[in-house]
Length: 130
Image (cartoon, rainbow, N blue to C red; front, side):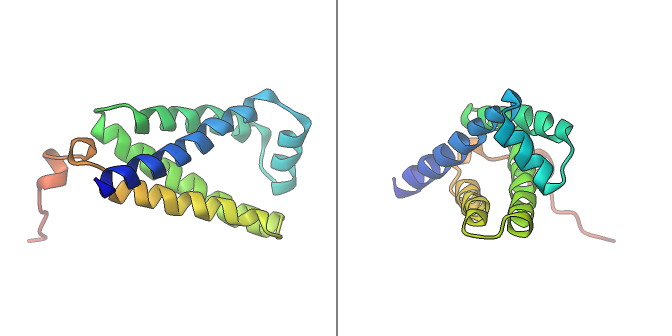
C-alpha cells in the first residue's frame, strides 16, 4: 500500500509540473526571456511545450509500458538538462526545483506497480557476450 501511495504521489507531482510546461506555448514575455537567458533557441520552447505534457499523459495512462520507458527517459534527460541550465544561468535557490522533480521521477520509476512495467521481450532477456 505504501508503494502504491508513493508511486501515485510522486507521479502526480511530476505530471503536474510537466503539464505546467504548456505555458511554454503561450509565448509570454517571461517564458521567452527565460529561454533566451539560458541561451536556448525559441523552437525548443515549442518542442518541450508539447513533449512534456504528452509524456505526462503517457505516464498517467494504463498500459503502454514501452512508451512509458521512453517517457521516463525523455523526462529524465529534460530534467537533468534543466538542472544544469538553471544552475549555470540563474544561480540562487531556483535551480533546486529540477533536481527535486528528478528525484520524484526516480521515485515514481522505482515504485511503479508491476502492471506499469515493461515485461517480456528485451526486458526479460539476458544478453551475454559470447
